Length: 325
Image (cartoon, rainbow, N blue to C red; front, side, top):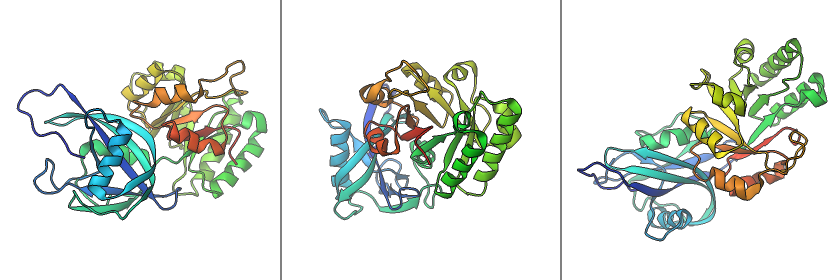
């Protein structure tokens, strides 16, 4: 992507940019592409996600398609809108609209870059330096498409723990322990057992719903804040991973202000957890996440086969309580 030429006066205009996260390989552990800026360009030698500025009258998707043809010689077959982040460089403020591109045709060539490299999601970057605006994108890429929510309240702790262990052995990487109506000692025992099961798998992470003390006690990877707690805390809780439940644009803004790692948004569809609610629906979900700088999981009345629908609407993936195995 091409930063605006250096300015000598204060920058007030936001430059709109479309950026591509090209993905290949195993969806559970894909590779992504970075390209190196050539000599003579601003930030020459830095690595970035390919893309560029929107031309007058272009949509972000149209700019993405054009830039990938010009920069890499490929034609996009499928692209999902993803994150939207603003970043201020000394010479310009840019609003980067990222797309996840999983299908294209043509042979990738560094037409307007010095080189390109494929990197593995979840592993330390093997190239440097990387443009500062792209750091949060690398962390977001490490999130899996499925966020599983426990349901020991309905299934019973023993049966739910068995379900968790089966799912972990099948590749589950992100789990939230909910079940706040369990007796404190029972919830602690259940959470500790779930964390112990997850520790047998290198990439598995466990978050505790709304209880930082319990999360620390059982050695969880982080906490998941309720929408109420989201507004009660004045700073990001001190955990490796922090998420939150959101139901509105204000909630999404608050989560971004706190610097959380991801959020869930819903309920999307009618669900037993929210009786009487018809859900916000996919058009409203898409409108709410369009400018989100955080990965957003769709939640509420969903099934695993709805993952592509969620991604097409701009979501990172789906959060499920009853539909995962």
